[in-house]
Image (cartoon, rainbow, N blue to C red; front, side):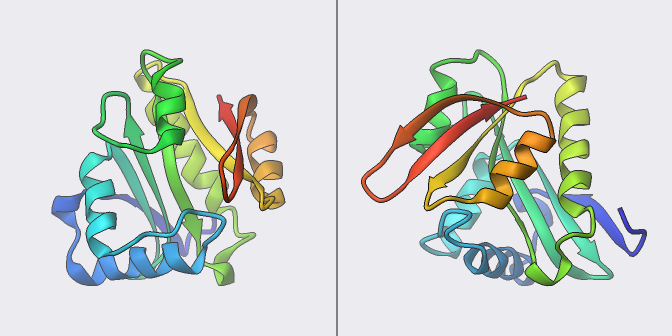
Length: 166
């Protein structure tokens, strides 16, 4: 990763309203690749449910983030539930987004290497889903390159996903 960027962990306690707004805006700018958030309160709730999260910073600007949950979270996502039915322990990537102007700088790989290190320390598989309808081909390619294996698919009324584990 380019040294002008840095990774920083975050939680609901460490975020101020300006940071939360930046994360929210970045999420919304990356829909439908990541799910749309209904409100800032929805984002706060996801962070409260989460177990491990990272910001990607360039100076003080948030240019990327990842939000991850562990098993046992009070999270109602059907995609999360797919893994709770199949795995006793896991680290679930709920959403990851990189600002379009900062893509192709190795940020996604750096985020995932950090996540893999965290997961390996606790002997956890990393679980996630990627949209297949509408297709998110860059994400499918990226996760394949990062060594994820597809373990399932699901069609919803308005989209479809493929499930992956590493």
